[in-house]
Length: 308
Figure 1 (spheres, rainbow, N blue to C red):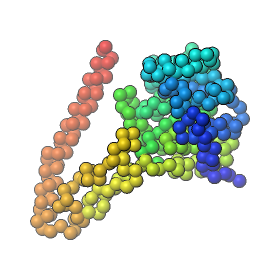
Figure 2: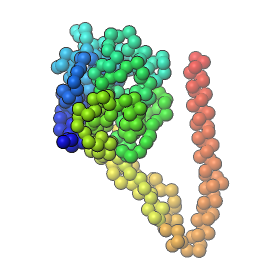
Figure 3: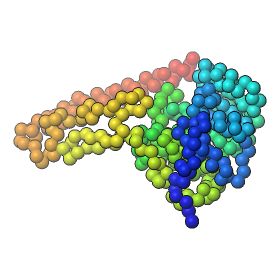
Figure 4: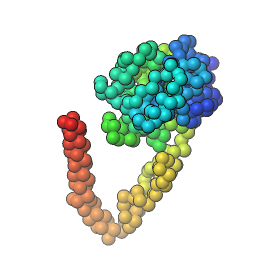
């Protein structure tokens, strides 16, 4: 008999992690038939605070590659593991080109190609850095998704190191399948994947993200009423900034037009036709011009970086 789809959530536990990752990782490794005692984490911060690998290193004798782009945090990371010969600190930003992807960073470190755990948390390009990995196939991948995005939404931020949107859970699940991984558990903002060859060991009957994701409180749903009013429900805030999303600021129609169109008076119908014509003649072209300008500036910025 198959277990409940989200049974791994029963093992949530924090020793160094943030929302129960340590306990789930521990249970996953107890379920796998073989482990080799190696893990990789980026961005690793100081290697301890809210870490998904510190418990493995300190309490399970794991060897680890800890990668952190911020130099000051990297110095702290090195200090925290100064007496450990099994921890390899690396000061680098992991990217998605052949020059800076994980393959190139791990190339000179004696780590197995199918090491146990890869933890990815870089607040933006997580999707692209995972996609760029080809020389290594860790048994387990823990990767951050943007928890404000509805589970049914496909969204992948552009591959740009200066952008920090994140990607949706569904898009990461689809990427995982392309790379030979299956989803086994979902926490508030982290998804857990195992190599497809191990998936049956977890006895999960339905591992769709809708089934496995239970924490939905940060999602803001936006929809429109029959009268054209934009309505929001759910989290209704920017969780990382602590700012409430104001429904009034999202309205697309002036209040005079917020009625079902068949209820418009003759005067209102005339005014609405004028309003729509104004939008098409002036507002929409301006939006297009702004988009074109933005793309040109991004192109110039990329060319400038290459020239330098």
